Image (cartoon, rainbow, N blue to C red):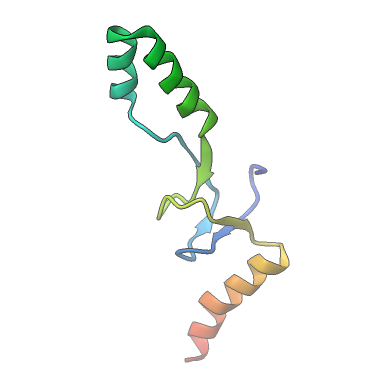
Length: 85
């Protein structure tokens, strides 16, 4: 995802840039590293490989570039149609 581009969340409708999200717990990762090296390594690899960019409001992986046809459709449905009512 490019920096500076506007994105719209297809789940909650917020507009902005996606933020990085790493699943799991840093505390669990630290605990596993101190107690057991192999599970700590596996957990760390899983967390790093599962990293994604999510909506800053709802934390869902549903951000779509606003300039795409689908992004424009979602924008119209969530913002322009609401103004008409």
